[in-house]
Length: 429
Image 1 (cartoon, rainbow, N blue to C red):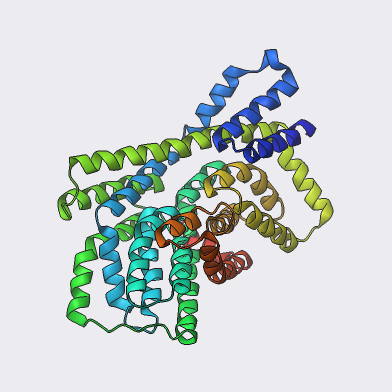
Image 2 (cartoon, rainbow, N blue to C red; image 1 turned 90 degrees about the vertical axis):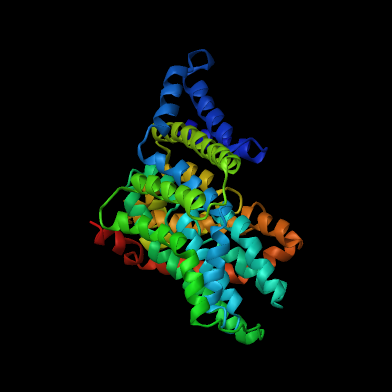
């Protein structure tokens, strides 16, 4: 057990000195075997087998396919069509473009599964439109940062697939569990936008008319059908989460090449190349984290930590509060995928020992870590928006903080009321 804890400390040290997450996980695992068996008896054959086993899963095929969907949608002009439809629908309200920002991000979340992809693709369009309409940068940047965080929650969610594999729960259940929390996030942000609209006297657009609204709907209809096809097929049992990813990627490919006809062979090659690179990075981290999780299990680290917490308190509510505080802190320093890979094997057994459903706990965990994408010092969404807005990093951070408070309130609500996450998976059987 002591050596297992030392392996965890070694991992933290390697991450702090700037070593990549996958290599830090791998070297920490090798260090464990060197300490327990000796340098000359490190079982490299077993290590190789565990690395392969970490990615030998049919469910994991969903990750590269969902990544491909996000890239195809971003590069095919689907984001512009979604923004146009959202603007025609709610842009005429007071502070309408703030509502448009949230609604467009929610719709795009049903295709990308990534907060960074939302910020990089849709964020530029949203900020340009809000600035042109006279919105102050504090509101513009704050709502753009926070709305980007809906992406990893509403299906397709890459973090949900990663968690499902590591926690050994249904990927379909994890995807469905994110729907209501994601909608609640969007609702909370739109309520905050309405409050700021009155307080800051934000601009008000004009309703373009039902004919223009219908035109935008028709223009974006094929794009809007992507999450409908995806979630409808899963909910009605037509296909699994992995098969849904294949259907969604085929649909996105057909939209880009046959419906919108704005992507040629060279653009497709570029998209496939980027999707392949992103997939390789995530899967290599997953392989190394599977090895490290096996090391932690051998070292009885999760059992030891769970026993320590049990001696500290027997209250499930207090345990959840401690975990929430811990994940908020960790999210400031680790990317979502890295944190899920490292912490899932440790935290899930603890949560289950205190009576929490692993699917419910997984959604809460992902939502907390996603907040870290917009908190300093390493929030990737903050860096993307800083680059796009031309504003200092400190300004972007302060602008986002009030909006992150609304998201945190939703996380606490979901933590307190498990049916918000578990109702849809239960409905699907």
